[in-house]
Length: 85
Image 1 (cartoon, rainbow, N blue to C red):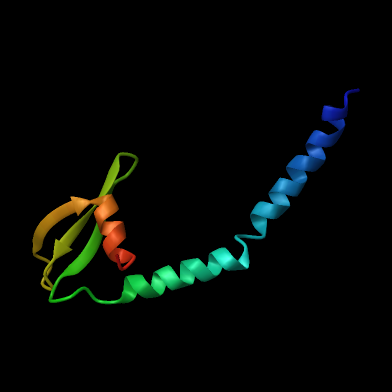
Image 2 (image 1 turned 45 degrees about the vertical axis):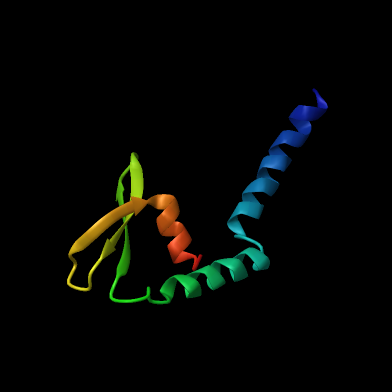
């Protein structure tokens, strides 16, 4: 029996326990801060929406409050706006 075969199941078990425990507190704090920034309204009457085609691509849309789409923007641009950049 090799050392690898003895240690592998225990290593997988530890990884599974680590994944179930969730992200570290510092990461959860960053997620909470990003959520708060994303809730801030955009200047003017614009609303930011995220749109996706499952398994294909995602993008953002700038809309008026009545839902009228003004323009589509790249996902990276939408994320930057949502993050307050």
